[in-house]
Image (tube, rainbow, N blue to C red; front, side, top):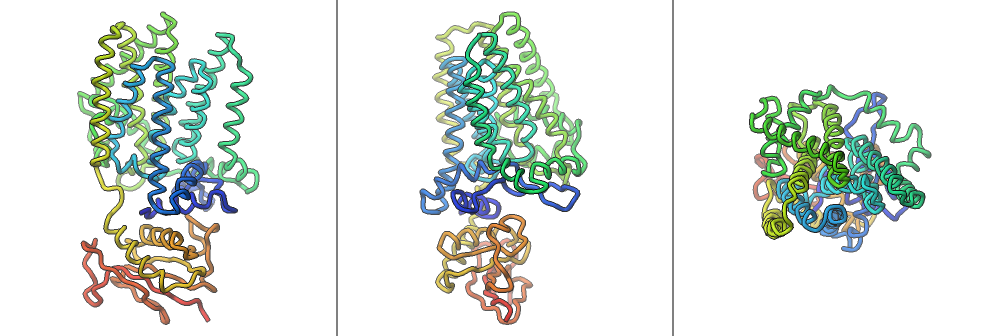
Length: 504
């Protein structure tokens, strides 16, 4: 069941194909300096989840099917691109790396519709698609634009990173096509049409609003909190891509962020040294041998590394430690770098095909094993079962007592601010109740704003210390099996929903 931000994503996905079709992404925490709030660049996540969300009759499983569809499309496209560039064995190797990457991230990430999570496998696909485009592959260029647009629109942190990377791939594509005297006009026209279509939402917003979201994002980039800086970025990258790299040993949790000021292990430094020696040496070998396959992949990997360093250095140093999701790009980046190093070894040493075939069989077994680990476990649960049970119970109890009119859903108490309010709102809407948010809500207003002066208000309350206003009626209550804090001794109830009539 979608809660908190996931519930907002579900509502906005359902808005697609209506008069409220999203033009922008989720709201950001960025400050613009003028008091205006910026949104993430675009709505492709909402557009991509809209069909499965509707196909399953608004049931929550539709969101999970949509996330699975995004990830499967990214993995299949990546494998096909690698096969076109380097053969079937390399494609199997890429699949094994992606499977291991998914295990490392854990199902709490790969099954999550949250915008910083759903973009990670498409980011890995973008890396490989840029490599294909750099070798003159038209299909890879289109894939790079599609997957890169999805990533850049989902989270503002990736806008410059992916934008410059795809631009590098496009320039390399033009040079490669000119060198081979292959047709150029039609591929560029197709790429341009795809880009305009994918960015039509942000373009329309920028043309119809002042100052427009892209301008607000630019202002926010100039009015940010102090960043972690080059030292912090280098520390994280060395620990992420050194030996053993993050993507290979399942450390996708907050621990690596908390330890970023505790120095770098010698093994990580040695791993980075070996990795750089392989990449730089492989690039020199590719230039001498005119091997565009190895040269294109290594050049793409090094450009991506430079862009990641620049991006990480500008991550705001908020809170005691910046949240984990702002550093998750290092997982697919590390996988790309080590995959490129492995391809360098295979091509330089001319490893026999029979040996590679045996290795491919072993890697296929690894794919199955790692996929089982992703499906059967994960580092943390996808959602808190206690919160899901609370929303499910309260919504089922409230709906029979409501008319199908506009109700404004509010919440009180820190534990109910996002989780319960948006989770209950999404579930009520799924059950046919016209639930709205209060005017000025940052997430869903003005598209779904009610009027607290004329519409009844549903207050989701953590009853400990809450005093309902005069005239309020308690419609439902629920005590989770294991409440997050002591139950109010006076009522024995932890969560409740109150109906507050509009002022007379």
